[in-house]
Image (cartoon, rainbow, N blue to C red; front, top):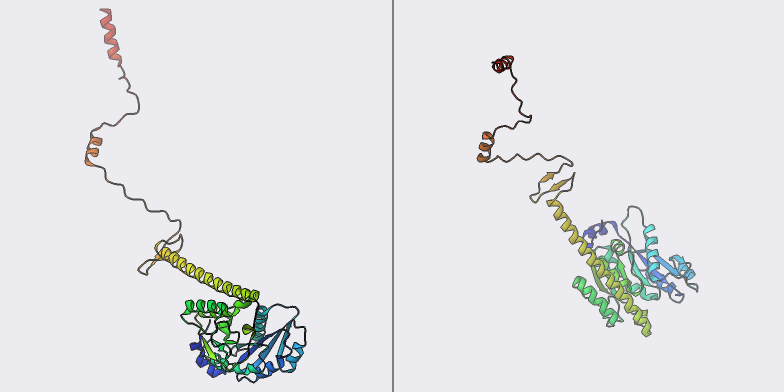
Length: 333
């Protein structure tokens, strides 16, 4: 059963819930060691997992020497598949009976700025929220068309307008992350993750973090890259809207079926009437014959006065011997 932030606040404080940092890296040998060391210094983080997405440099060796647990893809699978793999590895490393770790998503190119994501961890592990999104110092409010589309979709779904809806630096509780599985592909991953969490009733918020790192989202990109990002975001938004519409339709149809079932029971089953009582229907039981209607008085009188019909033909009376003798005497005289 999914537990929301308010329901787990006391339990999180008693059990000392922790978080695991998940870093997806590809050819990040220049920054990965500093990123891992800064992440390990964040209070509440007891596991740093690096998913090496088929790097061609020595990213794997440097991350392992810095103290991270490293998982490597034999071929490039992309950021979404790498994040799903990392989440499953973190789940396998959880202690039996302990509260599941929250997941802190970071970028491999953060370097020493990764320590700035520290405020996100206690907000989730202490039960304040289920998803904490980092507000970086570089772009206080995203103004691109893709960010505007994501912001509008989130505002329609929750009446909340985030400043940086596409921020990749965020901390998510295990329940909220599992509710969003499978993750959306491409650049629509973040907005889909937020929409799925909000649809399931989880609490999402933004926190200011001292991160001055300029991520790839702020770099100069080609028109094709921007178009692909906009396409991925719109696909994620559209699929979530269709999913919500289907869920609403399914719920409405279910209510209608229950309403009809209450009025008309199936053969051999029990049905509940509108007053809440149980009406038992017995299958294949013959119905009792209805009493015949009384005949009118005029018809009954005519039936009594009418003589009974005789089926056999009328027979002649038998002649006696005396009658035959008299006739013979008269004939002689």
